[in-house]
Image (cartoon, rainbow, N blue to C red; front, side, top):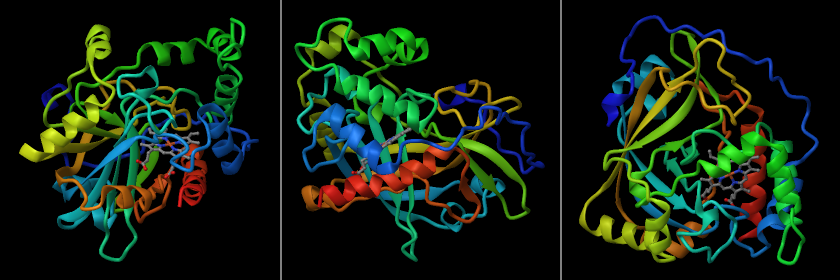
Length: 327
Ligand code: HEM
């Protein structure tokens, strides 16, 4: 399956594409706290993760690819093998959401590479190539419309009106996919980053994590026939027999690609460069405690890796608020 991607392996000169930042955003009105509260409004407040609440963890290792050093000087991505913890999750902020519910998609896959100096490298991805809205503020408008559309609200509900007025949100919701296994979906980082190598050359990138087991998505009838715990049951059975392996790539922006708008996927013919491989081999010894104490920081800067989309900085401040509420 990897052959379908155009892989960039060269040590050739890397140049910063003439990318588009015409979508430059004005300062956000929402704060990380107001956004966490908007998630609670939409999904409920339950002292668990504000979103991506139901999930399962695995542990294993990260092995960097040699190509990574053509793009970044980050030692975590250019050194030796390191331990990782990973968490798969359903999308919605509902602790007992059935795995086959509509709100389960896009499922999430987050990985923390444990650095020897404690400065961990975190990535959070989901299985849709593009975010539902262009900005942090617009996501809050969607969440508040969802919150105002509970049982008994007459049609068209506020969220139905919102979706009707936003064709791109409608397209996102209607094109969601539902994997047969957490280990058989491709996951996308969606927000752009700027990578800089040891020679000072920079590119804009987005993360893409590709399953070695191949992609497999369910038809609507197959999903309906699945149990409410099928993803979690399948993962437990799979990991008891074999490792779960993913290859981690970055997609490199080309001319005209939008850097600050995660709702627009970059064209499929953009180069992919491999950063490394995740090999997950076991669940944690105490899964409940491990999930509670796990915090991902999506926008944390590293040498040669910086956020290039303002949504990442805002996410970076929102996740610790939700983390604090669930301790
Ligand atoms: C405005 C945009 C976003 C906001 C406000 C937001 C907020 C949050 C919050 C508050 C959490 C819970 C954190 C915790 O309790 O530890 C979370 C978890 C998560 N988010 Fe986001 N998020 C946003 C966009 C995204 C995007 C674009 C992706 C992926 C492409 C993503 C993937 C995830 C994943 C995978 C988790 C679960 C992390 C875990 O397993 O602990 N989020 N998000």
